[in-house]
Length: 158
Image (cartoon, rainbow, N blue to C red; front, top):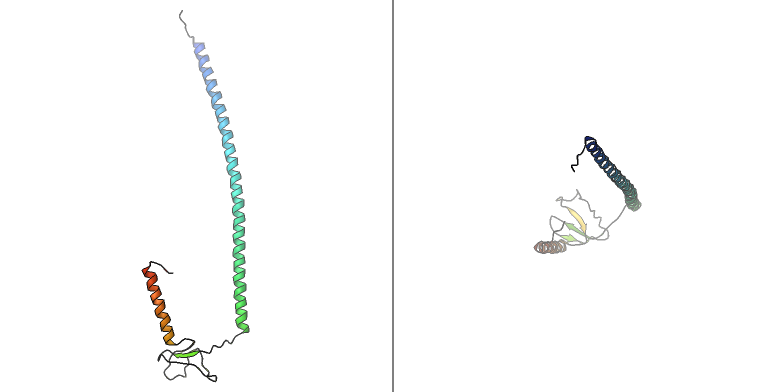
C-alpha cells in the first residue's frame, strides 16, 4: 500500500497548522495582554498612593517650615521688643587698658564707657571686663592646650 498525499490534503494540513498556530498566538496574546493591563493598573495605583504620600509629606514639611519661620520671627521680635523696652544695660567690672595691660575697678562715681573714648591721651582701647588680663591669658592658654590635645587625639572641631 502506497500512501499518496494529494495536493488537497497538503493544503488542508497547512491550513489546519496555520489555524492551530493562529489560535495559540491569539490565546497567548490575549493572556499576556491581560497580564500587562493588570500590571499597568497596579503601577498606576501604586503611583497614586505614592503621589498622595509625597503630597502629604510635602504639606507637613511646608507646615513645619512655616511654623519654624513664625517661631523664629516671634522670638526675634520678642527679643527686639525687650531690648527696646530696656535700652540701658550697665555693667560695672574691671576697666582694662589694652595698651598697658593694667586693670582697675571703677569707683561708684566713675563714668566708664565700653566704647573707645577719644578724650584719652594715648587713644588706648578701653573695655569693661570682669576678668583681669592675667585671668584672660590663663583661659587662653588652657584653651590652647585643650585644642592641642584634641588635635593629638585626632578629633576635628568645626
